[in-house]
Image (cartoon, rainbow, N blue to C red; front, top):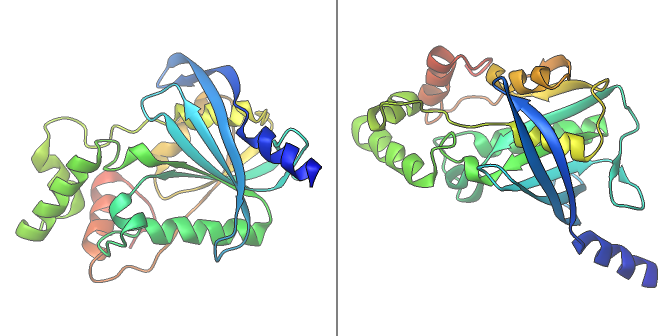
Length: 239
């Protein structure tokens, strides 16, 4: 019991590291702080959940990892040559409250199933990236337009802003990889339908070995939005 108690106390002891990450051609010095580690047991299997604070716009990161942990509570991946990763943006309406007009919850749980089947992998969940980084209030406004005017998710977003409708950044993900000392020799199998998420890996010396589509069967409610993301935003394998 004493050993387990010390391990639990260690999981709550903040560990901070400073790393350098390149995104969109600019170098960022980022502080990564591990604030917690635990074990969760969803239907898909068992994961270690890590809580991180990162000195970027998004701040909070929750990381699910299927791997053994060493004595310092860092993951030890058996296959150092290939790592499956998903970058999962927050979607409170779908992932928490079950909104059936999006497939975000299904994509998350599909990836959890796939990682369990592979035996190793990592999901980096970024809660504050709701609404493609524009925020929950913006996302909710787009849902009003979708309901009232029958707009798809892309046209609804464009109706509310004259700027970019996707302002997400992903350098925090690379910062976490560097926190875990994942070498650039480790090739990445990226679970995504959004090819824009590949760029930050290449900028930091990681090779995308394969893009693993996260395919969810469209429904009457999701099909218009999935088609819009595919046709207007360049997402892949949606419909």
